[in-house]
Image 1 (cartoon, one colour):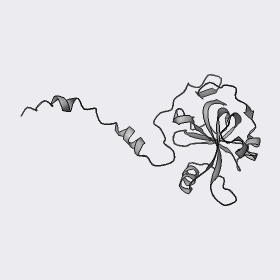
Image 2 (tube, one colour):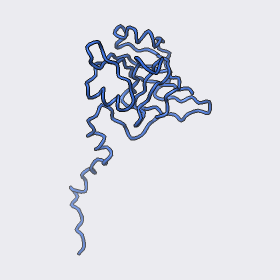
Image 3 (cartoon, helix red, strand yellow):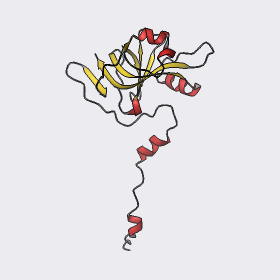
Image 4 (cartoon, rainbow, N blue to C red):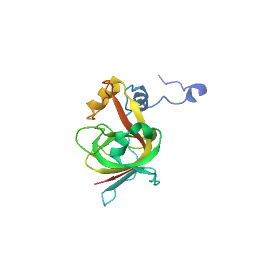
Length: 173
């Protein structure tokens, strides 16, 4: 039998959200792992940029930030360091540190607007953004550790870390 045409009111309804978008919105983990990375392709000289252009924010040494992060909480700075680790799923964070073990700074990207390559470890990064000293839930700490991060713990045993919410990233080989 022939199928009836949809009434005009029903045809005017917006289409349902795409399944990928629904899954993204329903994700309850601490990382959103967006579907695509945005940013300029890597240049022929091995330089990769993400986010906004660098603005020339005041540069802070990694060791100085890690020694007394509370005094820089909420400040916009530039930071340079070696990428120890990056998110193994989508590149939605990276960790800057001066050694394989010990404290580091977790760099996330403002509004998940850009990401870094999964193979970013070992590169030198220059980042600009806002410092955040964060207490983490055990769930979030275990999630990060499951992705290869080293999550520091305070004297009380609670997971706590220094973060930088980046607006600009430049990676060099």
